[in-house]
Length: 428
Ligand SMILES: Cc1ncc(COP(=O)(O)O)c(C=O)c1O
Image 1 (cartoon, helix red, strand yellow):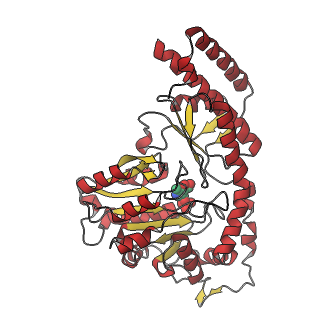
Image 2 (tube, helix red, strand yellow):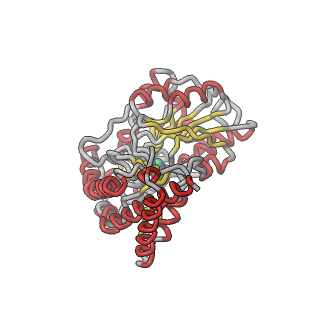
């Protein structure tokens, strides 16, 4: 798309750049310190969950349906927490395990397990000449870090408004048996905020894969994180996979990190009975049981899905004005300029912002100069390399509304100046 700066005559463009540079100098002089990089809830939001800390006390009943939560045992998680996990993940409670606080940590354990020992019946991934994973982009940098750390090659696949480009995914997995898996954040994807369409979910669950040990890391981190009562609906992938005989393909993860306490919640893993039993055998070698007192507190704090949705509605009250402000500031500042496009999600934690090719790194650097920290440009791509250098992840949840507004004004200003400079450089 042509920008307003590309359409300007030479003199008009030079004047526009001079005016924008003057504005940048003025803002830089203010010495601001704002942060729009962190995908975490604000302190006021986290405080909503403080009553959870009062659920247990020295005099509380610490039994959960016959399980003593104050002692070893029950590796797979206490019954009430597994029921909660089942509701989250869309599988029967018996097909879940509830572990420590981090879903990312379980993902790593499972991938390391397949790397070391292989999917049962198949060669351990570490013994293969080449192992690849599909990485929808823009995507979540920590996913890409898990596979990169093991020496697995990350292959980017473009996101579309309905999920990953499925023609490309199907083509790649059908012809290359070294592609052993794929990362998916199917609801309110990080960072685009899009939810996979029913058709995308069906195609993922049923597609023909050259690798019989192909696995989907179905990271449903934002499965209940709607901004309104009319959130996106995600098709249950386990049901479709089961019908197609592919139930072992899907490894689902979630946690209460952005529901109760980030880093101190509970994390869930759900998959086929066979996968659960097999993966559990290895995990149990290094863990007698997870923190069941925390599981008990969570299960009592969020005893039903209605209680959970009421809790999430409180989070949404904090989040809605922030996401609305992002749309307002970007629309007012950049809407008519052709300089950028951005997503408008119904939930989750991020907005994905794309500017002109070759602009993202410069915009992020210019924002930093003006006192606004953003997620590094490139972070949304494997190896930190965004080939077109367009994408920036906006994380609007942590700053106060006032700080967020100021940070967005600066992002708008930086985007305009960089796009104006690019238009001028094109002509040189
Ligand atoms: C898609 C996604 N998955 C996982 C995580 C981390 O989850 P946890 O705290 O359960 O490890 C995040 C955190 O931002 C995330 O965005």
